[in-house]
Amino acid sequence: MIEVNEILQTMQMIHEQHFDIRTITMGISLLSCKRNTDRETAEAVYEKVTRLAKNLVRVGNELESELGVPIVNKRISVTPVSMISGDDPMQIAVALDKAAQEVGVNFIGGFGALMHKGATRAEEILLEAMPEVFAKTERLCGSVNVGSTRSGINMDAVRKMGHVIKKTAELTADTDAFGCAKIVVFCNAVEDNPFMAGAFHGVGEPECVVNVGVSGPGVVQRALAEVHGQPFDVLAETIKRTAFKITRVGELVAQEAAKRLGVPYGIVDLSLAPTPARGDSVAYVLSEMGLEMAGAPGTTAALAMLNDMVKKGGVMASSHVGGLSGAFIPVSEDIGMIEAAAAKCLSLEKMEAMTCVCSVGLDMIAIPGDTSANTIAGIIADEAAIGMVNNKTTAVRVIPAPGKKAGDTVNFGGLFGYAPIMNVNNYKNDEFIERGGRIPAPLHSLRN
Amino acid sequence: MQKALVSVTGKDKPGIIAKVSTALFEMNINVLEISQTILDGYFTMLMIVDMTDASVAFSTVSEKLSVVGEELGEVINIQRADIFDAMHRI
Image (cartoon, rainbow over all chains, first blue to last red; front, side, top):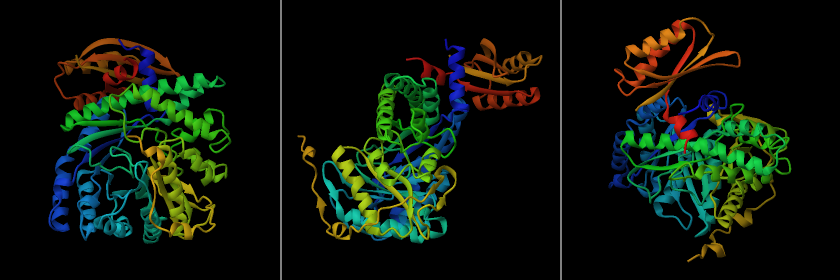
């Protein structure tokens, strides 16, 4: 029998500490939708997405009500569109955006390409189309994989993504370059990530699948408040126990959702995903460990331990852990990170160090509008190198807000939050970026 | 067995158990266990119920209990007990 204090603990986690299931994401393969023309492909895409995902939002809402735990987002990820597109990927983009609206999901991810070793013709065309696509569509997100541990870094793709981000910023200048919040540049992208904006349905995935992303930095922070002043061993144990409980709910939701939707259950992504709400911050977890602010010396060590303990606690709670699984450190979506960046306690360089030990990368970072495309490409190359060498996923989602300077603020609203513009090192790198070609895979890619 | 937890929070007053139990009875839901506590000055009642033979759907039970809650001036929620089992039992 469940004891009263356990019931009350669960209720406190949900009602006071912002514990929620961050997303139920349905992955849909679009490989069967390829037709002779992009118009026909777009029609097939719309039909398939609206057919398979028609009950997604209803099932999500039902589970939320029955289990009494908020399920914040219902989303869809699809096969990278460059695998089915031709000369006019905009047609497919519009169809996906419309399908997302029709089934009632707030985002659909997958307008992207896997280019870590080179580009196909369709991928080149898709990259060209990206800025206009993200300016025109509302719910569509996309990602491009530019490197991997096995194949090295495609520096041509890195350079082009610098331009794609710049152009998207210009086309969406009226919304502080919000279009850039829908583009992620990856190294070692994962095929089953349920979190936006980087979610896509990988080629190794089944026809249709359900993945769940859990969250709960507030719950971890509260648990750590109880072990104030105790040694790291106690801290580690506390994080593990908390992560276990959070992930168990994710597992329950994933299994139930898969059963009701009649599709296989893929993975639970046991990430700590913050929101701009006070008390739902990964940076505050770091503060609770004893740092005045995220960015203070010791931050990387604190984050490394947090990330590892979340995995160790979570992995036993779910039969299939996958996706990104780690702590997210976006700036604009985390009140503690916003404060640290505004106080200049946190620099872009310190964040780069933090991305060596956490799940993703430079995420939702607003930078000055006059940052050059090559400088952005340089930031992408550095992150990709960290991912490639450390055999982990890294990503860059930066927003060069037109007309804004370091110290100004951009505001996206909702879950995307707001962010102070961070200072960027503007020493030139043009000759480096414009070399083109590939950075060869590291020695430890040869594992066979 | 389909177990669920009914939680009632608010100010203590006469008739809470009577009203909630009556509503549950009308939907053929069996009360397995009741516990009461004062949490941060708030009256908190937890009921474990069995919904296996409930005469209406879960969403209807939830709506009905909300109405009873409004009449009483209490907040009443119902959630499946699976979430507590998942979190606290291996």
